[in-house]
Length: 169
Image (cartoon, rainbow, N blue to C red):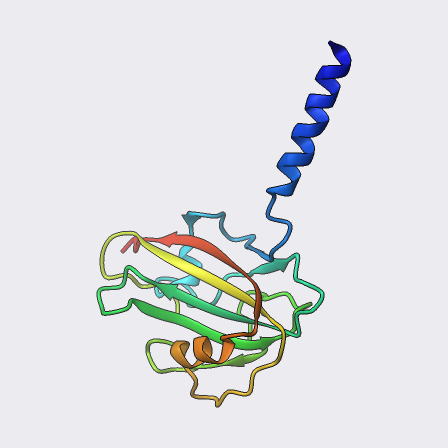
């Protein structure tokens, strides 16, 4: 009986390990947890700077990373894009107030990050990170659609960190 229990436990650990998410990149933040509230520091009510992001488990064949921060809950067709960035070094940390890589146009038609500022209710903010098998050659005025088009056929792994924000004032 003891041998059967040990075998069953070992088998369960092996099976569960095969379903883990170790095969793809992971994106986390020290500022908020998955589906947690994003501090107002990173919004229009605060310093309007990006939260720090950590991208882990990047595939060895990744030549660059790309990031899209999107609010699908925004009251406009297709939502609102807060940040578009590409050619991020796959070994780089995306620190708070990040100015590296190439940063395209957000939904306000400005380069770089624009903080959360939902007109009402709690919105979901998707920090989508893509590991790419190449660096991208995009113009400085590229937006979300241009980045998504350029990434086609080059995504080797992707992750999505969702944070929530609701205005307090």
